[in-house]
Length: 117
Image 1 (cartoon, rainbow, N blue to C red):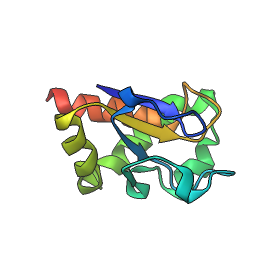
Image 2 (image 1 turned 180 degrees about the vertical axis):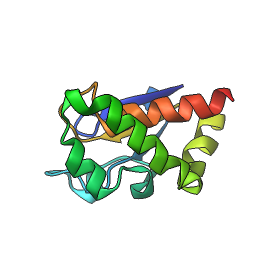
Image 3 (image 1 turned 90 degrees about the vertical axis):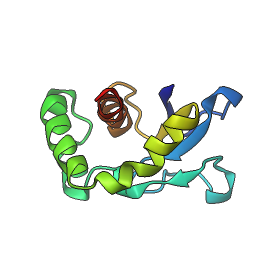
C-alpha cells in the first residue's frame, strides 16, 4: 500500500518504508529526528515548477501534467520507491499544509499508475 503523510506527523508501524519526497528539507525538522528510509530529492518537482505552482489549487491539473513530464525524464529516481512498494507498505513524506494539492499526492498517483501497467 502506498500512502502520503505530512512530515510533521508521528511515524506509525503501518507506515512501512518512509521516504521524504521534497526538494528542500522541511522547516523545523532535525535531520536526526526524522524516521525514514531515504530522502529522494530527485523525485520532487524541479525548483522552477515548485515555485510556479506555489500550492495554488487552481494550477493543480497543469502542475500534475508538468510534474509527470519531469518524472518521465527521471525514471531512475523512482526505483527505490518501486522496489519498496514490491516489499510492503510505503509512505511518502511531504511538508506542505495542503493535504490534497502537493507533490507527494501527485507522485503517489504517478507511481500507482506505473505499477498497474
